Image (cartoon, rainbow, N blue to C red; front, side, top):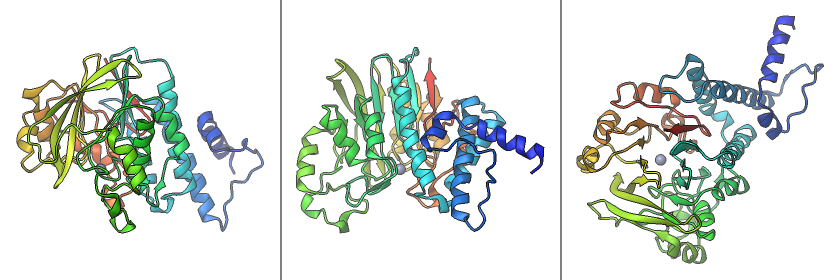
Length: 382
Ligand SMILES: [Zn+2]
């Protein structure tokens, strides 16, 4: 190997953040190691995924979220897209370790100094966000990802329960938009409920009779796995809107452990025929965040979606990146800032995982500034 190449590789390894290297139990770099993977394609792919991912995170740390991202930041996001669309890496050790590292990073952010701004928006996996303010911490659509987390029947989560527990322990309430596996996680809701923390749920979620709870109902059905778990969680859920609601419902979400209250408006949205709560959350500090879940940007709901700006001021809009008519709906919401979510939902096939590179194109013509975030990043809202 030429000295130039050796120097480049040494620089690359040195750039891997210590926390990431420790999480991977990486041995200290061996100067004699040849880095050969002859006849070990799988091992080569895993190591390559770890190196590329760590380098992308290092670049993102040096180029934090911005409405006018640098070329370096965009390349790092696109590198993550490429990794997450390589299906050979699905459910691989490199991927699963990265998911636990994501949860650990978010827990560390929540453990750090409280934000000095009124609102910090932390990006979790998929369309999950955590709103951290000087007084409260609210989770939206927080899931471990993976198979069947919605009802726990033969579930195969991406994030381990231990890692997720550290995030839940640092949050005061959970809001769930709609009863789909990439937005609702029964075990996560149970962790909130067991700690006496409110869980806001859409109509129907886990309501189906436990007697239906055979594996045949697993796919897309919001059933609880058994009568005991259903009975335990059901009374803890707050359901602000009925399935047939046509008007928004306002509730006050009391956070007993913080002695604080948060105003929540549940707009009566849909994804197809499935009720989907579009939650407007107003923090004690007076910032309002609108999270879409997987709200359709078409159909009857469009009429009120386009008039949200007449109903209330929205400081931060959190739409799913692939919403149809995103520019039109954004105009109707008239937010101060857009933070899209739902990129790279790993339960979907790659045609609908949705990339950050697609989001870059989708936010080009919005009527409000937009900031793309990678999992684990946060944006402070002054
Ligand atoms: Zn979704």
